Length: 107
Image 1: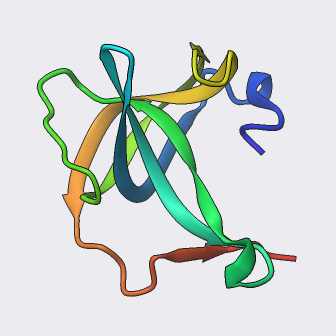
Image 2: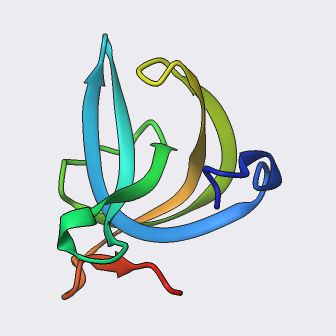
């Protein structure tokens, strides 16, 4: 819903858990907090999550799990050449990966 209607969520608080994925984007490093998701079956699985802006003093590694809290905003994301929702993280806590790392679409 956040990706489909980002303007409805700007300024709203969000809290969620996921794993860190950092990708190199030119000279910058983009950090995402993702979950694996399944819509119908494993064949249509993918990642769901948001671009995150962690506090500058934080150092994270790919595949570490975190619970974050923050505020939704949008940023121009050059690889997609468009505005995308993101979260400015105000609180982050490293957590243990859940036993089931997938989330499922509810019908």
